[in-house]
Image 1: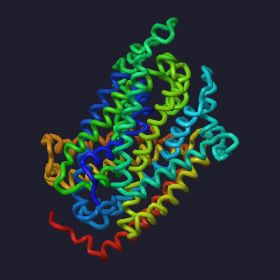
Image 2: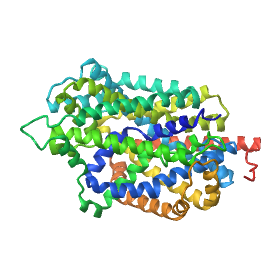
Image 3: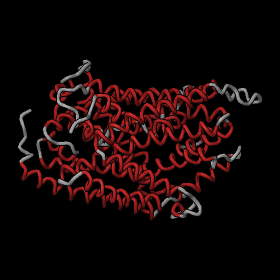
Image 4: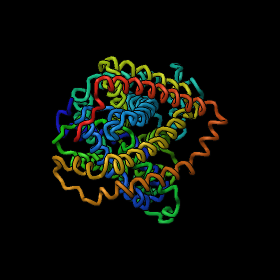
Length: 512
């Protein structure tokens, strides 16, 4: 099985990277961590980790794919020439699966908001508190189990619908499902985003009594550098975390997608193009729309909103005061939904690939099994919705901590086990561009050191608080139990796959 075209795989990888983090997480992170100054650690992380590690994942994935492995456990075994290395691939299955369990719910929020704008239900006037209350009620934050109450919120309908759409598409496979959808969704996302961007940049100064709250003022608020922020470790941690979350490195997605690329097709330019596409969405669209628009109508208060507050409370206030706000509100949230679904599909594919390859089941059976497992996880996050506690805890342990761990493991395997010489040969095969030799020095030495520093900072900065949560909060403790239970099931499945692959002779390593 291969991708149908180079454009298809580029759009699929870019679609995996382009998601809610580009439009909601990035603007808030930049505003809270030095504005324009934030871009210095951001681009350092992009150059030291983002692009090099993405190229490494493309190289390792295609190498393993040509040797007959497409799932993370098989890919890790192929790279290390050891069947026991398959167990390290567990993280590359656990991370996308557990992130999917809560990401699908946020995805459903976007679909729900798009529908409510289209139907006029979100026309709440200029009452700022009304939008905050709508978001809390819609997402079930008022208490555990309240999201299930159809009398209070319709979010369950959108969660089920979003879940079904994802599995219908993933069941269709790499070509007919993911690739076809991304070829349709990515251009449509750009169209919707540019429509909203044009509307924002032509707003001028909506309130003459507040001349500072203008388009220029919003861009200045977003990008005016606060150089003192560079002295704060949190700024560097936030920048590195944004690169991880944004580019999908350390997710286990790129190595899976790259394993379906033909042996002599370009991956160097494809990888760079996918990264550049993501940066266009993040910096050029997300950085020019979300926070500047909020500032124009809300002033400096826009900077006080967190990721969800900015996306689902501040922006509805903006659309309510904007001419034709109902239309642009629909376009915005529909665009977010498309961005989210291209990402959530990529989270399902690595696990389905393992079920097919490791357990020897059909894609339909694999989709049904994965649907059951992920539905249990999503139901847990959906039920424990009070203050989004379950979502927050799973996001930290898997979506923040384990991602850095997996990225560190992959960088060490690439630089010291697979080898930069072999990696350079793989990346250069069929390449349409010449990758600088310095990239491989960075991958072998600087990237692992940088990742270890980020891992240490993550543990030091956030670890104690979440450990206290485990000790004192039932939902936090149950969230960790859920993660460990899924990890245990995956390890058992990998053990079975190792036995099966051994009998098939798949561990008779070729020389290439």
